[in-house]
Image (cartoon, rainbow, N blue to C red; front, side, top):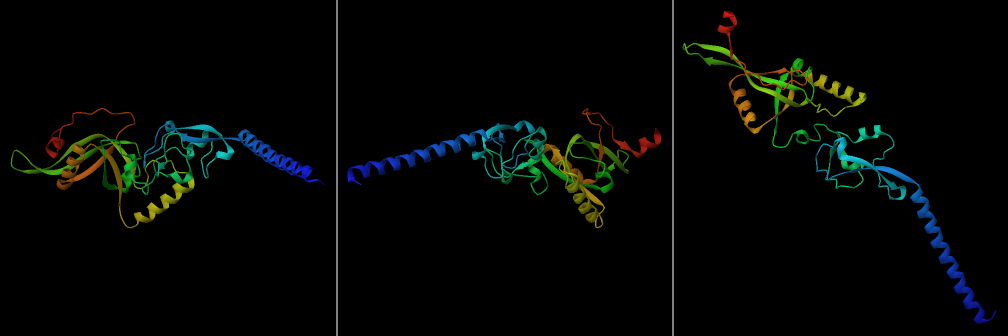
Length: 251
């Protein structure tokens, strides 16, 4: 074969191979674009250790080729539950795919601070287990103080006052309101029952203003603290007189 004919054939062959590679790549991209997945992304920046609410996220379509490893995908509305009320391990920028690595369950391991409202404080107190078993996260309670007071007569007498009203409960023991599945809830209950064998008290985490936290700390040093549960939706602050034995027996 003449040299003048061979060279054009080689060039044509190479051009055909390059063209085939380009066509193949284009076909792969086209096929990938047809295979669309719905993934969850934040509609705003989610801060580190922030509790993720349903209205923080939305599903968006992306080609399967661009699906990040361990990203949460959306098929039905029930898939929101896999992210809702979880805690961000790291800051998740707006529009980024949310991966399993980026979040953790709402639990004491994630930290109570993720549930504390801005400008409030998380105050932890001990209460009897029987009391704690009747209270759930997000309930409202009143805090009572019983102490010995010096009366006008010079006598000392036990009195009780309502120290704080309408206080939000952030957590009860290890339950921060994370919405546990049945298996996890059973395991947590078993763990707490084992711990109850060594103590007759549990903990309540309360949401308090810095001022109220100071007064509760002061009150604890002076007497006995107890809590009473309020009805859901009852946010009224009442004027309540000091309770004394004299008033009790004179009524």
